[in-house]
Image (tube, rainbow, N blue to C red):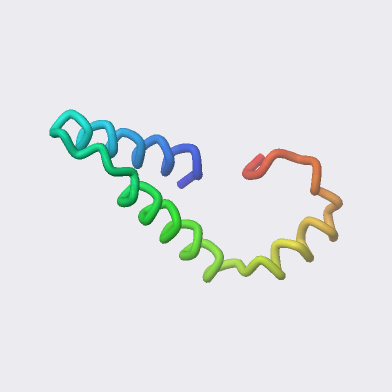
Length: 64
């Protein structure tokens, strides 16, 4: 799963709720935060930093 796919689906869900009169973004941001936190539990920020340093990939797009 990519973050693009995740965000697109969360936005679609928010749009669906908006059609029903629920225009609150709190749920959207809560779900997005949970997804990011969950991913960081699998591969920590420190591990990512070491990986970016090892492959000198700081300027490359994420997921590329």
